[in-house]
Length: 318
Image 1 (cartoon, one colour):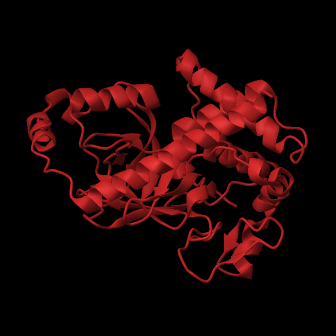
Image 2: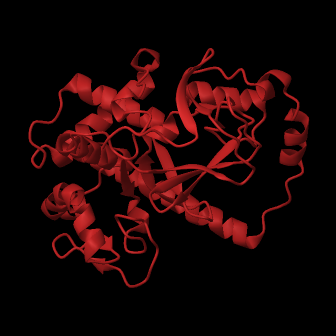
Image 3: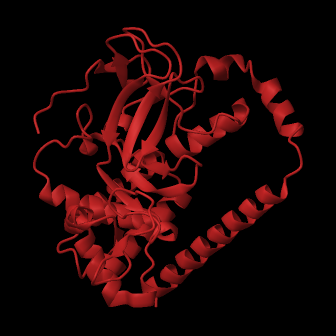
């Protein structure tokens, strides 16, 4: 598609931050700044059967893929829309049966590889930033992150090498996984439940602030960026990469570990809300039964993910 940009927005060089996103007009609080469809996305395994694999719509009358019996869709249109990506997974699922267990990141990267092979033009999610422009920060990765990357690469080869011809070489895969880990998004529903993972290049263009002027929410696999502060022409658009409930030092540590920078925003330099946040954490009321049940459910899911990860890691090195 022709690069038409985003109305009311422009890409610019942000002082001390590199590239960024800047407003060209006024946006009121609550106003939609822009929407961005996913470049590529995967539904989490735990939600298969409850949500459409293509659009992530939740409904009870989904029908399953006739071959693998594991992917579900709203209708024929959704199934056809996903087939160019699902077909490689479909064959692999049938081949591995119960031993099919790649991580969500591995599944997403596999789809991105296929997307890059069939896409020759800029996509609707790349109006201002191309996927290929994502930072990988390979020079900042420690041995632990490098080991995780290598495990994912091994899993990709194990589950997909027979179904994706001529996978990229080791260096290219290392960079690709690093790009996704640093620029990927977790898609959540209105109750903040995890639905899947995706990449949104134009959304990734926004720099971080611990006092953001926008928030990102999701409608299926479309990211919506809305103003949470008044935005004037010339203002930079800032999103928060992390949960803002944490006090300054915790936020800085998380940002440095995941995104490789030390935040110097006004909130971090002033630490003006740290006392209030610490008080909130101290005065948190005891958990209600519903909250405990929710935490148990979450813990079970985490344990299952660890089991799956351990399972496929064992398979890889048999």
